[in-house]
Image (cartoon, rainbow, N blue to C red):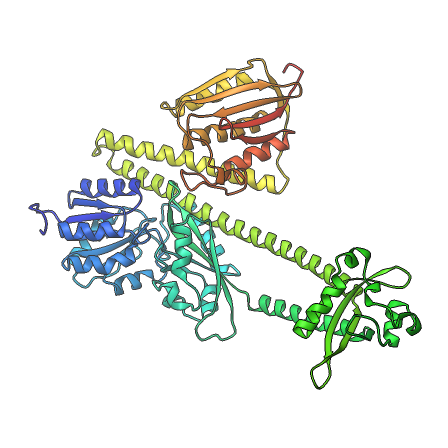
Length: 638
């Protein structure tokens, strides 16, 4: 075989999930039918490993950070033409297998299905020179659902229904911008068959948008989302808005991108119509107003007076003619000699316009629109000025009200967009967080069940630890999501009573030490403090704070109880560097993440809301890097 003296077929495994690589490596080794000669975590490493080992098979994931599988596939085939490439992906096939085969893949296998037939499928790829795509593998139903996993299948089917029936265009996109899954609404918006979209670069199916720039905003700059408005080839006049959000790994690294596309043509047309309506309204208001029109001599004295001027300003012609026009200006404006300055500008530029307060004869003020035009004789000598004044006080009031209404509308739209973004983030986070641990548990359990006696002790420990870790991750996710949902719906049940803080924390710390032997948690402070709280909710809040410190900080973790006259503070700090200043403002917001470590971004939000629901609060103290949970003090003894 190329690249080795072994008589077994050689395999290179490339996937960015280390636990999955471990399961696959062990399964292939235990079969006694293959030799794994190399492992990698992205497409670039896949190409290098294939060039180095020239294996018989390359088993490669589709979506990986850096260079994805679809990008690397042609390069890998060029580096070793004799190597047969098998795409091993968590994405449902939905036509993606045909795209992979067109790029040179010999097979397409779904990693979310059972691994029972993996060895046989790979052997079949080596035996069959026709490069048949294997989807789904034997042991699944006709629709690709594992027969032994009805609960997982039900949840996957519900997610597919939500995805497919969404009222907006939705797609899963690799970090290089290739569509690997899309729903019906997106195909309709882009006027492309869904099968044609699979494997296509999104930049190739839209126009007027820098897709690579949007992806850099997320992957390189670390933004939570990136959006832009653009057009679609073949659909003149249609304007779409695309929003990309990252789906992150447990290490908070982007795995792939979640795309939302909405038709905003109607919205933009409505906004343009609103602007046109406002302009017409303004013209109408200006047209129906009476005009004050009069002439000034070169020094600014009134030389003529019309009926409109009398109605506007309250002076008769006898009273006005001969007076300097500065008498219509408020005292503070006259002191600045602004009227004279207006005449200078009109004479220099031929025309001067402004809006400002003016005075009537009775001393009342009105908002005036003023135009002063320099008038010249045919020979060019200066004759004087023509002055037109309109009372636009009512128009000004209406414009101010419109501006206020527009600001309110903008705030409402921003809130609606925020809700939509949160819902999209909820779907993306839930789907990603469930896929990893469920898949790891299922594959680890199946391997242990079938090969317990064949596995080495270290390998069994690895599988059991992976299952325990995945179970804990699922429990935390479900608890956080359920609590967040009840908090948002104001349906959270609180049963408060007197709780001895020290004893409660000792039990919690003991549980953490057993679950995490490497962790160090110290208790200190007031051992007799009693709070008025729900014991279960106090436990949930403290577990989130301790988990946050153990996951993001450095040991030891210190928990200090400090009593005040009406409250009790529970301070949690670790030996880490603290929260970056850029993160502090949104530290307790829903889905707020720093881009490092695991979690859903709900933990600290839940801590604060649970505290407030019990009459307390939660905060971060930058001075010493402590998270402070404040609860009401209880005087009675439990």
